Length: 124
Image 1: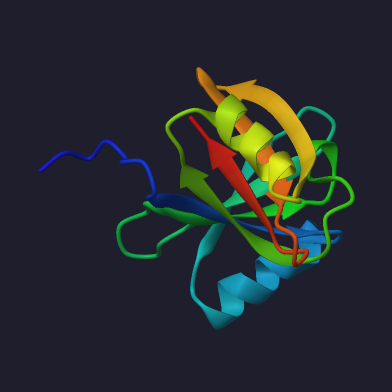
Image 2 (image 1 turned 90 degrees about the vertical axis):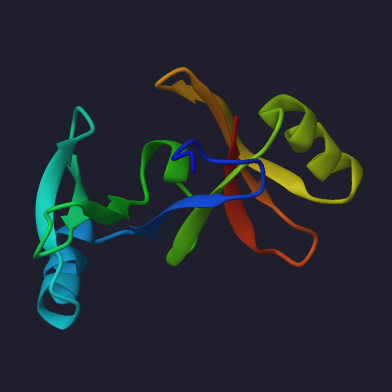
């Protein structure tokens, strides 16, 4: 069995909000995750680590940078075959590209919005 994500896999979730500093503590108390600062240059977002293994479970992020303008929400990241083609298809089908393309770790990312107004991130 491979650990490599397949097309269609949801591979990450992060919470995009204005007040990540406060809300990370909420999830630490409610869920038990342990926050770990992740420098974004001018500010920190947070990796939320599982208390027993220390593995990262999710992120709590400020609505800044590529997440600027998103409403408060848990944003999921889905692996696609070709992020550029998927973003173009999104627009062709009545959706919007909210952010991107951006590159991180060799992957190309877009934040898209479907015709109903729900957002998600895609990457390849």
